[in-house]
Image (cartoon, rainbow, N blue to C red):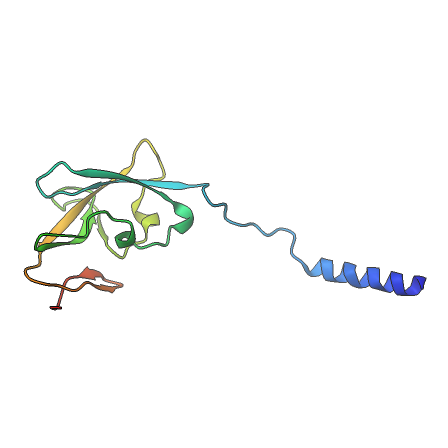
Length: 134
């Protein structure tokens, strides 16, 4: 009987030694990103967005408040209103676009393009385009 208990304990110890003890998991809610989205269409409309950077891989178009409007579509976001700053494709991960400093959020200005008639969004690694008719 003692031999069976001893061999069972040894088997359990062998299994436990195979389990890594230094595993580190990302903690949800530990880092946040901040961005001011400016509609940049002649109005002063602005939206402050805070995102959990646990999901930093999310593409910008999934959180951006401005994607399309009356006969126009946003093709990218830029850190300057006239498009002379750093440009971000709509497929850029939010981890690259957002500031981690709450007091200094990234300013992202919508860059608009005319899209007369009906249009379809095509998402690719190069960004979001408004080609085609529906």
